[in-house]
Length: 140
Ligand SMILES: Nc1nc2c([nH]c(=O)n2[C@H]2C[C@H](O)[C@@H](COP(=O)(O)OP(=O)(O)OP(=O)(O)O)O2)c(=O)[nH]1
Image 1 (cartoon, rainbow, N blue to C red):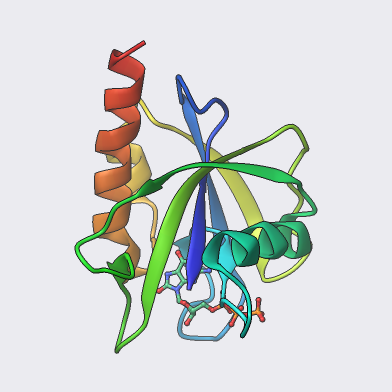
Image 2 (cartoon, rainbow, N blue to C red; image 1 turned 45 degrees about the vertical axis):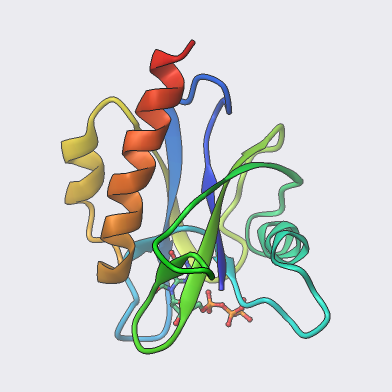
């Protein structure tokens, strides 16, 4: 799997896009990083650019990857893993597929961000991401 931490500005991120899933029933209503499955023959970055076009109707630029504890990024449930990239877009994301709500959340309010009902496997990713985004801001 691949997912995007879509932010308003790669150098000085203030807002992060969370997306609320519509399916399957066990995950509907939970927030996640937009993205999906890498198809045969695709690299992860190519798959992520395609998924964001399909799901949100946006062209994205991928910036750094958020390193996870595994070679393939972050553990999800079962044996699945997800690589996550910080991404930006000049377009306005729309919930075209797989989501019923998109929300720009405030990176400076980590308690509010982590209080959203994320897919449980995403919470460690969200926490590491917030630390990384804060570090990028401080470096400015
Ligand atoms: N997209 C995404 N999937 C996640 C996250 N966290 C997490 O556990 N998952 C799981 C949920 C699903 O079982 C799987 C991704 O499935 P998906 O429906 O988004 O991707 P897909 O490419 O198979 O589906 P589709 O776009 O063809 O509909 O990974 C996350 O942050 N983003």
